[in-house]
Length: 344
Image (tube, rainbow, N blue to C red; front, side, top):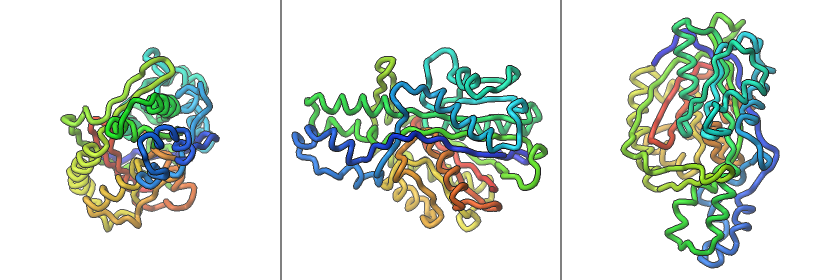
């Protein structure tokens, strides 16, 4: 999966204003902590997540996706009428039918000639959408695409708090719900286009590789319990070990396919899970921690929005500069892994 003419022309993030600290969440769980004699502070200590953000109750994923879409078009040198493909790539969706992209397309104000669709693959959706759009651009089918994601983690976290507070679960029974408390909300979007449409310096998507280990698909499963409640259960320990194993195999393939070894990479942006995951991943793959850029400390795990939002923050803060070689590492439930090479 290699590209010669695919560029990320612009990138933007949209974040909610409402912040929940890990201490706030533990205070809401005080009856559970006291009943099970759990130490306060363990959520931040185990994950490194100090806070996460949430959209106002009732916010649709399409609204979040559209906010990022409008933000990236405001930065872009391309016009909305040049967009030929729009993809909403989040886990979160307004409903099963129609595609959430349909609502976001209207809110962004994209023209009727745009192909509209959803792409969903847990935390890898945005990267999958980038490569699908890239393939259409490289083959000459389209010249420009807008890829967006808008994740709303509030229903999951609120439903998890309700489940934990029912007073019946013991220490072992709460473990599958713990990962839910790391979830946050956010949105990101990118304008992806052919190199010929970019005046001046272009941020080129070089390509990458993907691997699946679907024998582990049962380790993290989520589904809607009702129109306003989402439930998820995760075997965090096995998911971490299996994910790192899959990442190791993907990293070897990535180096062979792109020629990018650790010494040729300037910055690494990965899916944002938490500090334990990062330490285990970087240690197992022999990666240089100094090249990592993270946002999980203040934004938590925003699903498919985590990696592109973190990349956008890295660019805006100057941590990623023109000419940098950036490796994008995505690992998601399923299990699936994708690693992409980006010449910024």
